[in-house]
Structure formats: structure tokens, C-alpha cells
Length: 335
Ligand code: PEP
Ligand code: MN
Image (cartoon, rainbow, N blue to C red; front, side, top):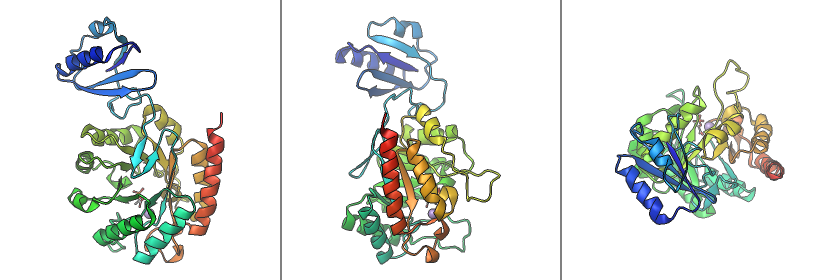
């Protein structure tokens, strides 16, 4: 249930109303916007007397929210959320250029790529340390050592880092990580979602291979219901009957999720297409459609990459993509 307060409501009146809701066993989510304050009520609201609330002097409107995602719902938080990843803001007009290799492979590889993508304008460094691979015989990532190398690359470049977690027991190793990625395969690993929800680190939540927008938002809700509201959503392509591309990039995620939620939406054109030469046009399309950022796999030597070489672009190619994306974004922002 959502209660929109009138502009002239005093703090004392607001606090009194919030207490009254809380005494009925409800959690009150307060969203103070420029023009209005919205109280989102989470819990069993069936006993709340709507007429009584509506009759209060300070109440503008009361609406019941039928969707099962509440904290992620735009109705609860009308303004776009801005998530802080280290010193970088994402969402609400702040665009994130996230780049780096699929996997951390060596000290020189991650540091070299980090410096190159930073010089081209990337704001956040990506790199997998724990890798979810289809085959157990494929490279599984450098694991803890990979995280240490990422932390060193962060120290040297000043870029915040994002990397995937696959097991909640690894959380202590993620101390230096600025944003924790939940990969597509773990989007519905609810126990893992609850555990990262107990941290206060930003979470990059990827859409599952065969999941709907609403399921993605329910997964975000798992994280947020534990108290961590720092969630960024990522569309990375879904499974369809098309096999020419690795997945099918669903760019309608941008306007659709924009409507349903206040959380930022980032596009990953690398995993979505699986082909390096499609990354540039799809990244440009994402920027044109109003994404809050793109995440791109960059490798110094794609042909020898230990993971996802076919979809990785070189630092030189990234430089061109970054320029084009930022140019398109500036046009997309014009009225
Ligand atoms: C990744 O970003 O490295 C990754 C494995 O992505 P996804 O979960 O989207 O497949
Ligand atoms: Mn990859």
C-alpha cells in the first residue's frame, strides 16, 4: 500500500503517522522526493483502514500495490535511484561505463586492461575471479588470488571493481570489492540473494537466461527485503529460439524496467551477443534507449583469452565504443 503525503505535512505529523503504521506491524519505506513524500507499506496491509488513512489531513492519496515486488517498485520510490559504487554514481542521470576482462588471468593482464579502459573513460573495472562455467573442465577463474589482483588494479587506477560471487561462504573474501555481481545463473539462488542482502555493498543483479522482468524484480526484492537497497539490474540477453547469437538482447528491458522500478538498468552487450563485432552496435543502441550504463568485456588478446574471447573486444576497440556510446548518450539526453 502506498500513502502519498501532502506537501504541507509537518515532520511531527509524518512521524506520528509512520508510528501508527509501524504499530500495526508494518514496515514503512519512506521516499522523500523533491515534490512529495511517499510512504510505502510492506507487510499484511489487509487490516489497514484505507478510508481512515484517506481522511487524514496530511494524506494526498492511498493506493494498494498489487505487484508482489514492493521495495523495488517505482510506485514506492517514484524518483530514479542513484547507487554509489565506490566513488562512482550510477542511475538518475549518471551513466556507468563498466569494462574489463571476462576473467582475471594474471597481474599484468588485469592491470594492463584496467589502465587502458580507464584511459578510454571507463568508470568501473570488471573481472571475474569465481567463474560460472558450463563445463567443470574449463578454466574456473583465479578465485581468491583473482580478487587480490583486482584489488591491486583498483589501488593502482582508483577504479571501483565489480566481480561475481557464487557462494555466500566467499563473502569475507569480497571485502575490497565495491560491487558484487550476481550472475545470470544465480539470479534465483534465493539463499545467496538473502546473504548479499545482509551486506550494504551495491549488487549488480543479472537477469537469468530464461527469466521474466517480474522474476528479476522479485530477485531484487529478495536483496532489498534484507535491507540492502543498493541494487543495479543488468540485462545480458535471454535464451530464445535464435542460436546465431549467444543470446537475444532484450533492449525493451530498458523502458519496461524503467516503468516498473526505480533501480538503474545496465546492458551487457558482450554476453548478450557472444560476438565481439556486435558489441559496438548493441552498446550504442543501449545508450540510445536510455540505459544507465553498459558493461563490456575487454581483453588485450581475445584470441588467447581463457574465457569468452569471441565476445571480447580489444582496448583499442573499446576506445572507439566508449566514444560512440558517450556521444549517443549525450544526444539521447537532449529534449
Ligand atoms: C560475467 O559477467 O562474467 C558472466 C558470467 O555473466 P552472465 O552471468 O551474464 O553469464
Ligand atoms: Mn564472460
